[in-house]
Amino acid sequence: MKPKTNIAYIMGLVVVAVMSSLATLSVTQKSHAAAENAESVYLIGAVTVTDLDRLPEYQAIAGPLAAKSGGYVPLAHSMPNMIEGEVPNDGSFFIERYDSLEGLMAFVNSEEFKEAKKFRDEIADVHFMMWLPAVPPGSLPH
Image 1 (tube, rainbow, N blue to C red):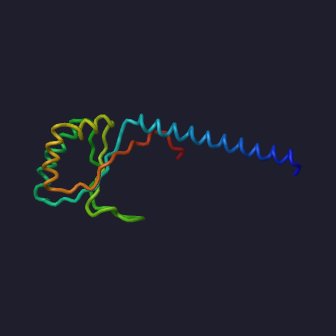
Image 2 (cartoon, rainbow, N blue to C red):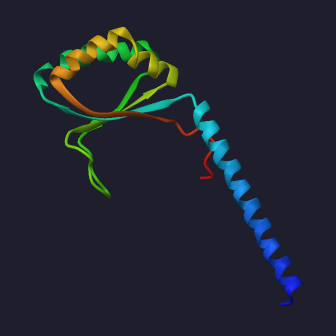
Image 3 (cartoon, rainbow, N blue to C red):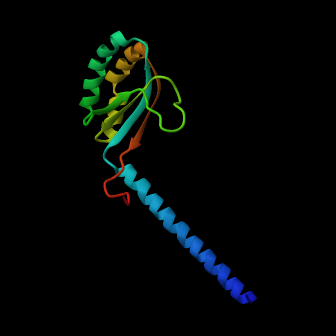
């Protein structure tokens, strides 16, 4: 290739790379924005129950408090069945769906739940709790 052709070729590659990066950034930003605007969120956690006899008492308190925040749906609570990797801790995992992040935060920040947590901490060790936004309908290509 001639020097001018090389420069044109390289500049063309740079333009394609920049345009590709901008397109990826745009899609990523739209995905994050859609996730932030998604209505439902999922609470995921891991816990080791240390007093199974008192667990129903805690569930009778916490369940209605969560439901009061709107949209609380327990989806799973079990020991994990690993496909790949390692479980980060002993205990069981749980997944709960809430209609909105506001509802979840209203629940976990409520004075009633702060009191219930004192009881929970007597009967269980919570390893972690986190939330994830639901994937908005139609946002994935498949």
